[in-house]
Length: 598
Ligand code: GDP
Image (cartoon, rainbow, N blue to C red):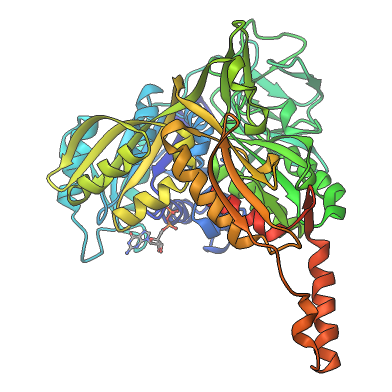
């Protein structure tokens, strides 16, 4: 089939606006699948994703559709990840398409990430098909929402489709619009191979499976392929399309979307955004836009049971097979023992990894407070990057500390402008701009340090706006700030795992709160224990845990023996989880309590 009968498109939507439901309907209507059953396997395959209502990994499905013009078309629907941490992957998925369905809930209007993805789609010159969904709901405001979208993309309101994915109303119009409005792919099947990898996953039998859009040339069995950024080569194990099952075809030509099972052992060798070519006739240049994943958020993971260390290493290695963005290296902490310093794309990515370690590998993890990467300019002019507060050199060596800043876009009902502005200012943010999307909803743009977004910014935003606001952010660069290291000392001994880098203005309040918390959670010892918070060697907050007076067992004198034994056993149990800081016994829980406060 010629290129003119192929359409490659994606669906841009906010969580819960109905992407999965619409995809279901498209697959049903085109006879790609018979029932609802198979679909969720196709576009929402991980449990975790489904529970969180987002799609972590992009994937694709191929449909055959006989349009009203009597012609049969091949429609490739490419799924895009739904979270801000994966915006690079979204961009690559878009680069594999010529069109995008912009799906907006008629009761909600457009949300921040959708808007960001819409701009991304426009940057990639995709044809946008605006669609208002859920018109069956009594609370739907289809006219208002259609007007909002029409204005945003600058098309007449009549071009905005109105559908109910749930009831199947207007679904055929969506398919017709894809056929009529989205241009067919262009590309030269005779040119050297350039295939864009828009997703990849590791399969234990076939090695890394690259999801590709062939831009130029042809990939076929028996011809060796090469990953252009790394020069890694392999012989394809299988080549095919998603129907939605993996169906071997032996070859893919320019314009087509499908997969190449590469036999490679790790997704790091075959990363999203990279280009596949052939070794016998390599393309002179890779496709534009490749960028290796850059971790932005760092935290240390420690097994709460020391003996699980090897298990944790194996688990991280396994996750890494399928996650090119996850990085880790071993580290030791005097307080927490042996663990790993890990880097993530963002908070959400970190949560996913932590949850998978706990759920899929049964590990109990102690995670330190997340940190960003700082650029530290030393007096001698050299620049060091650090991700661990305890690595910050002494203040007398430091000329300047720079931290990552983000551009944050928030969409909120106009009623909550005040609380949202307060939140931005309280997080050292700088307000930039405000635009009304419609009389009721505004878009606020601001610049905020990433470190401030890490600490429950999203939750704070949601609670201040009764759940109505949405947000998106992108990295803008490093900026110098008046930052200091806040050390916590227990009985005169600094505790590495608890050190933080904070803005000087926040040091006192943070120090105070942490000292108080530690005082609450560290049990009394046989001697007085001083808890201190210090900046640059100067103590800014302190508290004392008074020595305990009586033996724990004293209160059991005369009591029954079982109770006494139970108490001793409980102590023994507790002992396992005690960490020694100097002479002071600190329960694991103390760290957790403090880290949560981070
Ligand atoms: P996704 O997160 O964008 O994939 O959204 P889903 O497809 O999972 O839909 C979220 C919720 O909205 C589900 O409960 C759907 O049943 C519901 N939904 C989707 N489309 C419609 C619609 O057209 N009308 C109504 N009333 N509900 C819908």
